[in-house]
Length: 223
Image (cartoon, rainbow, N blue to C red; front, side, top):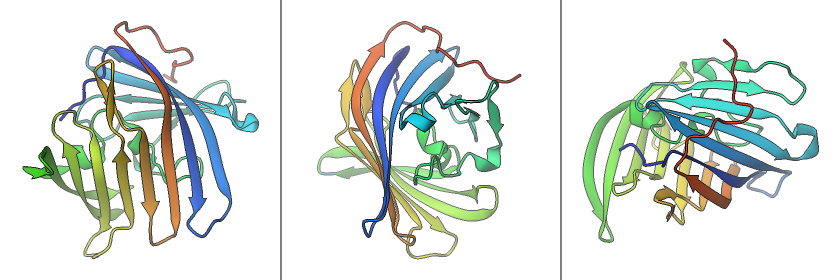
């Protein structure tokens, strides 16, 4: 279920968050560079807009099926990055409904905690259904149900439920999944928190896949 990512690449995304009733809109232009090296994927997310947050960056380091990735944040005015604790990897990012865990390229938490994976089909497309349970943010027992398209390993639908709840408190949908240089990515990812009335989306504006593993600029992390 691990996705093919080449040796590295870059992409440009627009991250937008808003209240369902038409409340204030948050909008960020973000450059994302990733590199694979010795079984690890390092991702550097750099904010380009808005101006006050420009040059703020997030470094995410993951290995397949690790329960939690390593995450470091470096505000534009800081000299050294700050490590995000494992319990905050599922915290919301920049006032949006995305979490740091949603930014993983390989195996997000609902995959690493999977208790059941089964084949399925829909419209002639081969899928995997994933069921998982764990302590969300290390405090709340949750279950997740996901659909992953088998040929490329990209999650297309995920729903998170508090233990015993009939309706999800959080959902994710990926649309327009296509391949760039052999790397499959969705054109749009939408995350909703229906109970709270918030929706966020990440739109892919451009992508370039590389077969070289060049170092990530600014990717140094605290010892």
